[in-house]
Length: 122
Image 1 (cartoon, rainbow, N blue to C red):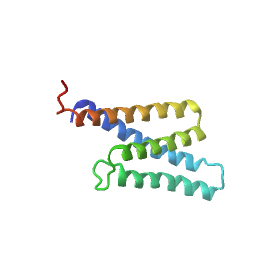
Image 2: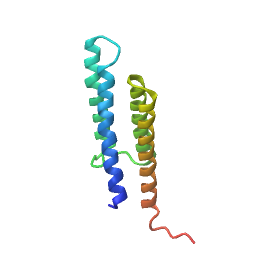
Image 3: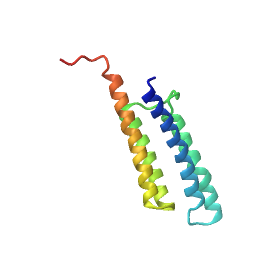
Image 4: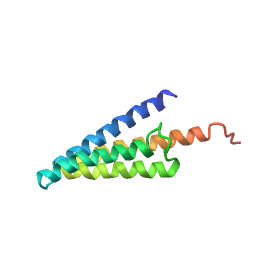
């Protein structure tokens, strides 16, 4: 793996862990009764962890590829962005959206360059 790919993988891990914390924070601060807050605060991060580990994790045997993987990751990051906007302010949500978008763009670029590295264009 090239250093740029390693940096993007570390950055992806940071975003994934941050997403779990944001969803937990959103659940525990949701405007509802204590029981609903506890349920959402625990269920939302666990559900995202299960989805991510099943279909997005690099070592998963059921890992999605291509557009399906991009769409699932984008959907999760959008959900987390809206959750963050709900509990904090739009600036924090915008920063998270920018960081997650930059990761997805870099991942798509790295994947495309891996696919076309042996192609000779005249």
